[in-house]
Structure formats: C-alpha cells, structure tokens
Image 1 (cartoon, rainbow over the protein chains, first blue to last red):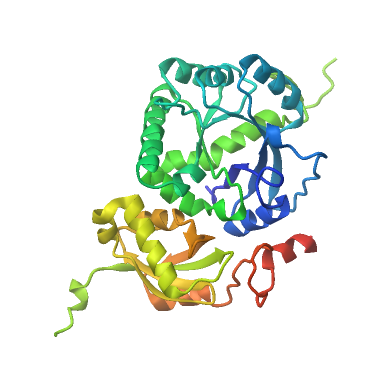
Image 2: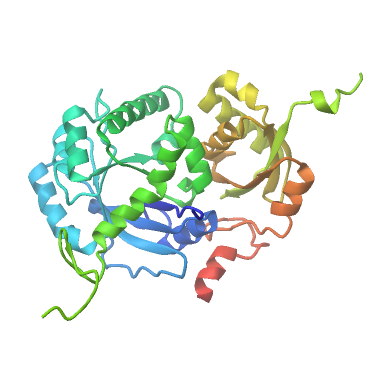
Length: 239
Length: 136
C-alpha cells in the first residue's frame, strides 16, 4: 500500500471565504493534499462559474454546501445542483434539515448537524444515513477556533455522533471547513487532532482518504456507466 | 550538579515547523501561544507530560522539542493554534526526528517557507506556491 491520498472536502473561497481558490489550492498542495473540494455556501455563490484548474497531482473538485431551512426547498436545491457538482454537502442544524439530508441518497455529506442541546443525530437518523450512504462531516474549524466550554460542547457532540456512526456503520468525512488560508491544516496535523478528539487512527485516515475517493467515484462515473448497478466493463461485439 | 546519565534522560522528538502568518512573530510570542494552546486543548496535566519546548525560531522556521511518546498530542495542540500576537497564523510541521541535527538537515535546510499572497510582510522569500501554479 502506498502513501494515502488526502482530500479536504469542505473549503470556502471568495466570496464565501476570504481567499481565492488559487491561494487555497496552492497552500493545500504545499501541505500535501491531493485535492480539495470547493464548497461555498449556496447563499454566497459567485456570480459566474469559476474555472477550476487542475494541475497534475492536485485537483480542485466542484462542490457546494447547501444552506436551506425548509426541507422541501432543500430537496429542490439538491435536484438543481446535483448534476453540476462532484460533492454535495448539506449544512445541517435543525431536525428537519438533518432528516431531509440523511434520507436523500443524492446527498454526499451532512455538515454541522448539531443544534440546541442535541448532537444532531439519533439512532433513526444514523440508520437512514447508513442506508442512503450519506456521510457525516466532521469539521475542524469550529473545534480549532473555540476554547473552553464551547469547545467542550463541540467535542462531546462529536463523540456522541461518533458512537452512533460506529454502531450503525455510517461513514465519516474529515474536513477543514476553511474560510481562509489560515484555517487549513496539513493532513498529519488533522489526523493528530482527530485522534485526540476520539477517532481511531484508521477511522481518521479513512475519513480523509478512502471515503472522499468513494464519494468521487460515485459522482464521477466511469465511461461505461449506464445507470445505478449497470456498467459496461468491457466493450465487445455481443450480437 | 551532575548531569543525568544518557540512559536515564527522557527520550525526545524534535519537530521542524514553519509558521505561516499574516503578521510578524517573535520567538516569545510563538512560545506563549503554543503553551496556551496546548494547555487549553490537552489540559495542564497532559500538556506537562508532552514537555513542549521551542528550541529555536527564526525566519519563520523553528524546532519544537517534545516527549517521544507524546508526538501525537503535541501535533494536535500545534494544529489547534490559530493566532499569534492577535494575527491569524497556522503552524505546519515539516517533519519529526530524534535528533536536532537530523531534523535540521532533513527538513529545515533548503526549505522555503510558504508565503500566501495576503501576507503583509516584505517579500524576501519568493512565493513558492504561487510560482508553481503559474508555471504549469
């Protein structure tokens, strides 16, 4: 097994974050990432679609983080953006939104599920997430930027979600949720921080490399793809 | 006082790091922030077990010493660092080794500190990352 390829699946650039895509990409590349997904919030999208350059060995994926309180409007947004993005993230934060996201197999990741006094997940939602293949996003920015009681809250929510995810076999994705260059962390440091926060080493590794790759493979089907479950593996004259 | 026998001394790891920051930072600022970040994230007990020391810091690069069993905790507390001197900063660990000599040879010599365009300090170091992007 070679060196794992690391991906950061939630990065915000101008006009959502502070830095341009190029700056974020250059720093992520310097840190040793293989790719980042540009996932601006859906209420702060740029006017024109930016051209994402991909140099050899580093790729910028097109993503989006949907922010919508109303579940039926959220379903509409999912339908609208699904075809054009590689990574579709839903910004959770209320029971209805979390539920709508986790019960929709077209969603890739649910970020920030926590609200009021709940970690955002329960056994029903965790089962739904596992069935529909929706990953739970663990984001570093809130953990890194808060201290004291707020960070304690965040970490205990994370643990609660982690327990549920382990029990029901829900996949996890670790991302920086970076708003600027200074929120990016290198893969090794992200792993170390995740392990301190309660993840096992292999879980953290998977959450940064294997699961992002699975999500990409799902959304960028190969040339022989016909529909779900049907794929042409070898071209040949069958008739 | 008699120096402790080598076999009795605590084993250490040395981490080479680079600092990417929007403002200037002195060694004492870096030490202060690292210590406060470590005790905030890990608590005073674990932070003391980590035995973190900043051995040197100049030209945006430096070496941190820690206990050899607590490299992970040290890395995590360095990752939790967000500001130095009130200016946003991020600390990137270039590599770890068991001796100061090796860590300097392997990671600090010939290493150019990454400089994002937004940095306000005078550009003595070339923008390595941005240059690489425009080349290709």
